Length: 182
Image (tube, rainbow, N blue to C red; front, side, top):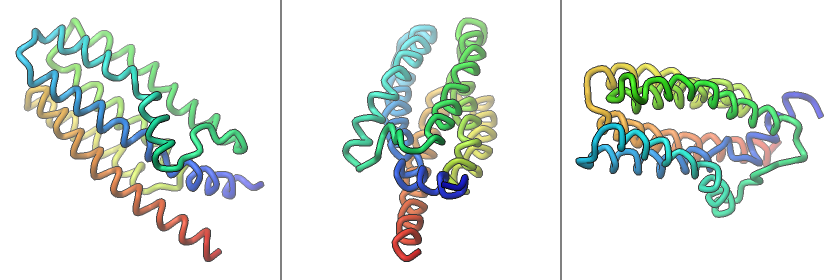
């Protein structure tokens, strides 16, 4: 199978990672709720880190509901997608430094890390949405995060993730239709 065929296969069978984007809507919603609370900022930030932990189990459950081959072991590019995701873990070291040092900016930094990590998935999934939103989310998180409280950044992220999900649904339908006719 050629590289382009493997990319197309991955994009179709994994529905361009839609299950992870839908799971992130839930996570950013939890972040919004906690940052609207009256808890101390360090407690809010600790809970924010805790809320990111169930991403993979949530994505797995959503993958079952929307018919995604979660592990897609038949395609070697699946391991590349995992590597793209794990790379984000290294960036979380920055967020861990921000946590006690500039606690009111943690949500902004997490949003920037999330946005930036999307870029290589644009290549993997043949997706303009990933490419554009990687840049837009990162820049918007910086601008909004510098000027507004964390709950505004979390709310913005929910909006972006819902929009992103809709764009991916359109892209996946287009790929599936092209694959059916091609």
